[in-house]
Amino acid sequence: ESIMGGITTINTMYHYVEGGGEAKGLAEAGLRGVVGHVCFSWRKDEDRRALEALAREWHGKHDGRIRVSVDPHAPYTVDPEYMVELRHVQKDLNERYGSPDNPVIWHIHVAETEDEPDKIREAFKTEVKGGVVEYLDSLGVLGRDVIAAHCVALNERDITILRDRGVKVSHCPISNLKLASGVSPVPRLLDAGVTVSLGTDGPSSNNASDMFEVMKVAALLHKGVWRNPTLLPAEKVLGMATREGAKALLWEREIGSIETGKKADIAILNFDKPHLCPLYNELSHLVYVAKASDVETVIINGEVVMENREVKTVNVPRLMEEAEKAKENLLSRLSQSTVKG
Image 1 (cartoon, rainbow, N blue to C red):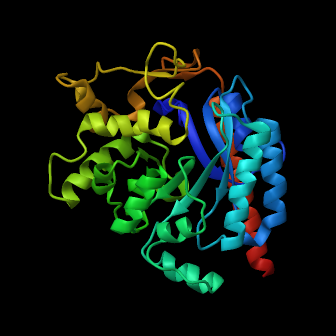
Image 2: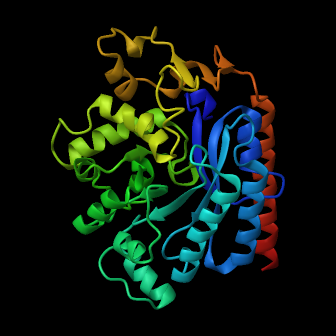
């Protein structure tokens, strides 16, 4: 789906499984990506083993297309001591497997809903003064190699800290709307100088991995919420989906734009369609009109992975069939466990 929608680089937070899981899938599909293992306080030993295996086996592999990250799930599911430990784990993995040009980064959900401070207090009986960002800053875990997903419930102090620490924000507007989480103050973040990229948050809370949808919703949402039609113009939103995403991954020296010396990661669209005609402003068309199905050719790392809507690296019909079988198997197991329970 990502390839067919023109996506060349993915940042994930999921569960590492023996054999590679998502990392293996991205590598075989020809995609570029940062693959993380999501960590929780209730499975620390499992997390430690998974992070070591993920970094050892995948970081910097497959022509440098695959990188890894350490991913504490959220401040209310990772206790303060473990949060600090995971920052040390990330730095240790970076020293052993990474480099300044190929870093292991840190990825966490932050301030997705307004009740997060209460969740932290209830879960860990700890004092939370101010917002969630201020709480994380008090633990000393924030920095320029941190991606903070969502950042909906922010106060001015939070925004200042994000800017001062160089934290990168991943804005997931469709997920936030579907879950009724609220709306991230993206215009204020941008005015403060915070790097803001765009994300889908995945199928479970978006139902698609369609960055064209995300771009359009992001562009429209903030104009409507703040009643200002000049906010987030098409050029800015396209940059958030490309250049700013590369900055968030600390990969901007190699990807994020088409420039001499950078990797050839390119999506080619067919504008010869009724909904894209007449053509006046290409950037506006990309954000407000174009669809994932308009992508015809995708090049990643100089390799053509899709041409004329045909994916070259993956047997798509077979993959869809396997996905349906996996779904049916899961539902069957769930039904059996429900009956037994």
